[in-house]
Image 1 (tube, rainbow, N blue to C red):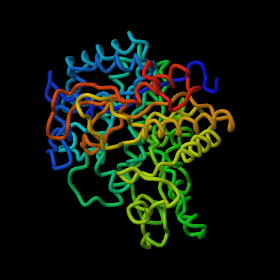
Image 2 (image 1 turned 60 degrees about the vertical axis):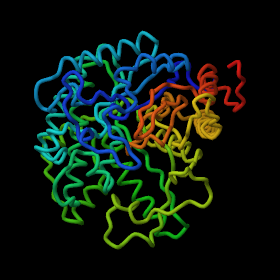
Image 3 (image 1 turned 180 degrees about the vertical axis):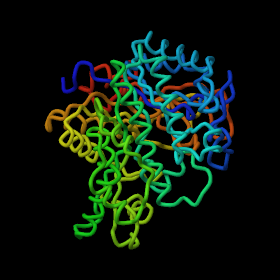
Image 4 (image 1 turned 45 degrees about the horizontal axis):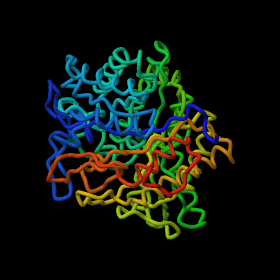
Amino acid sequence: MTFRENFYWGNSVSSMQTEGAWNAEGKGKSVYDIKEATEFSSDWKVATDSYHRYEEDFDYMQDLGMNMYRFQISWSRVNPTGDGAFNEAGIEFYDRFIDSLISRGIEPMICLYHFDMPLHLAEKYNGFLSKEVVSAFSRYGIEMIKRFGHKVKHWITFNEQNAFCLIPEVFESSGYMTGGKSINEAYQIQHNIMMAHTYVANYIHENTDCQISGMLAYQEIYPATCHPKDVFRAREFDEQINNNLLEAFVHGRYLDSFWSLLKEHNIELKIEEEELNELSKLTSDYLTFSYYATNVIDHKKIPKGTFPAEYLEFGKVDNPYIESTEWNWQIDPLGFRNILNKLYARYHLPVFPIENGIGVIEEWDGKNSIEDDYRIEYHRDHIQEMKNAVEKDGVDVMGYLGWGLIDILSSKGDMRKRYGVVYVNRENHDLKDLARVPKKSYQWLKKVIRTNGENLSSMVSREE
């Protein structure tokens, strides 16, 4: 076998893209609950109704052979204002939810924040721009560990934490609601979120037998040409957007080049000595990341004085050598192998890709299974490169979690963009019956998991 005997196969989701039940049993509003539907997006009030249908979804995961589910606790479900009293009804929901997973042999992994800031904290404090929200998050995270840490052993704090290193994503994901969206504010949010992660991670390591990882949306960036300035910009981006956070996750420090960047541009942050002392204690038990596609940077398109956090806003160009999805996400399985190698070689910790998949517009005719060979091809090629990383490169890989393998709303609320091997029968503005319907890729993935990744053949018999 290529993969370890206890290799994790599973599914990853967020709460606002799945749960629905936006005001059930004392849940408070999040920043997503006030977003209105548009032509190509739904509101977030129902999502795929997993709040009421999770048992059915777990049955599909169990049938597939999955042994891990990474889900998110909705902060405003368990603490309606984010900084007030905890909502016992919301906590009891997740208690049942976790027990239901464990009873099926599926190990839970909890994510504490996936961009859905409690609305009260966003409106009162402007989200993670405020250290009050850092304190509120730490209190919330530690309470969840106290409640569930005896049966949930794998934790992450922030989904794709380097999203808070990119502009404009940092302002869209952090609960920021008012202001000029300055560079100073962007870097303050980045640091505040690192400290929020640090307080929770250090609590875990000092008080429990749980494990925790910092998570990135690893940005694999290629230079557009061999021009030295293209190569330099790509390296600089990698250093500031990926490696600076990784150094903090693993070694408890920011890179020297990060401090130099702040000094060069006269960026003054509110960073206390006690914070850096706490940061110095930070470690990770393994490294988690999401991966979907790679990008290319052309230095000629990047205006002088642009920060690395903005490079993709200006300098991104298409890669002519690989195919793209209809969302212009460029499909690059070899890039996946590159990241696995870079993470393991640099930090020598187990690596764990916990999001991977292809979003495609699909329609169900109400009768026949969707023939999604493109999804089989995408996952097959990425799993094969992961096998190559293990077999040929010696990388220690813990598992492989697909993203939204039972269809969910996209990150923009667009139900047209489907990642699942199970179709959920709803559209952006028509909820239909929300029925779950396996696609062709379902049987293929079931075979892959049953053989621990040994059989990747795209041939699927009807008996399977």
